[in-house]
Structure formats: C-alpha cells, structure tokens
Length: 142
Length: 118
Image 1 (spheres, rainbow over the protein chains, first blue to last red):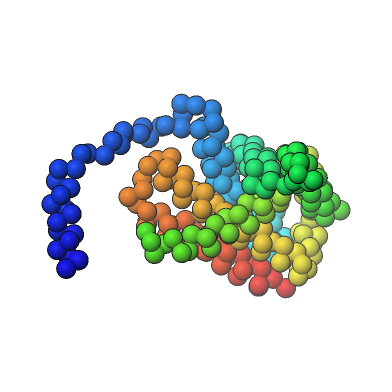
Image 2: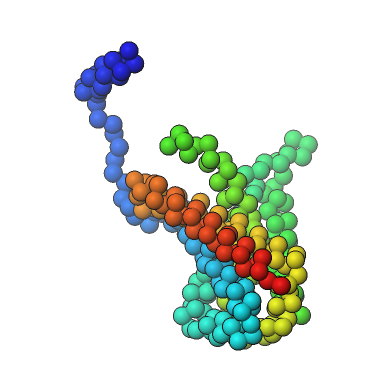
C-alpha cells in the first residue's frame, strides 16, 4: 500500500518544477568580511589541535628523560616551527576573543527587566583567562 | 542522517566544553612552549622541574582535560568547515570518522602518556 502511494508520488514529481537552487561558489566566504571572519574562526580550531599535539610531544619527551626534553626544546626553536606558532598564536587568541564575545549572544541576562550589557557578561571571561594564564606561566617559570 | 541527529547533541556538548577549555588554556600554552621558550623570552624549565610538575596527579588531570576536550572542539569545527567551506558534504561519513577518530586517538594517547608517568 505504502509502496503504491510512493510510486504515485514519484509519478507526480515528473511534472514537479525544478527546485531553484543556485550553485554557490566554493569560495563564497572570500567575498565579505563577516563570512571570512566566520571561516577564520572555524580554522582557528586547527591551531587548537596543533597546540594539543605540541603538548603531547612535550609530555612524551619529559617522560623519556632530560635528553629527549632538550631535543624537544631544540625542535621548537626551528624557525619554521616558530613561524607556524606565531600564526597559530594569533589564531588561538582569535578563538578566545570570539568565543568570549559569543557569551552575551548565547545568554541574555536581565536584571529588573533590563538587559545586562554584553561587556558585563564577557568581561569576567577575560579576567578568568588572564588569571589562569598567569597561574600556568607562574608554575612553569617558578 | 536521522541516525546521527540523536548524537548531534552529545558532540555539540563536547564541542562547547572544548571551546571553553581551548579559549581559557590553549593560548598560554602555545605562547610559552611555542614562542617564549624557543625565542628565549623566558627560560624553559629544567627537566627535573617539569618532570616534578607532571608527576603531580592534579597536573596530569589538568593536562588530560587540556588535551582531550579541545580535540573534540576541533573535530566539530573542522568537520563543518570541510562541509560548508569546501562544500564536500558528500564525503560526510569519511570526514566524520576522520575528525572524531582523530580526537579519540589524541585522547587515548594523552591518557596513555599521563597514566604511565610516575
């Protein structure tokens, strides 16, 4: 029964007008800054993963002993690595800023019927970010 | 597609948690290990010191979170970048398994490394 109905529907679509679906260029995101910003933000995730890989290499080298640790530090001094990390650092900071600035959009807080300004919501994130970064740096520099 | 819809929420939660961890923790690590130590702005810790730091259970827990959740954040974003940016949605399954497979592999490596310390 169902099959028969489907068959009838298919027969009907023979006369269905073609959907209007214009072909979108693969480079659609190059045209306008908001689109480009979106793609750059998404690409920041590559450098997030890159940093994780570097940290795994660091942990593995520490485990293998002083020589491996020295070797890891020397590997990180490679100019190509430094160049990648300069670009990567800009991207991961871009992720942090865009992520924090999303908070007021994702979460609308009202106090006595008035909407709390975005900076009041994203501001604490920045304070927390700086505090945590300082603690991590302090632990490694001590 | 309907089969995947049910797991979408789970992956989105991992993406979101990973985004928070990445935003708060990743920049300082890349700054120190990728720029400050190699360029000599800050003296890198000696092996004894960093080994002592890693030996602490709380550091290991911290490093596990630092390594695992951001990878799932990456998997989600990279998957959709490939879908939308390059419009290769027809490779849906392949991309899905490569991205989340990568995140799971990274998490397993982190767990293995951090478990064996001591």
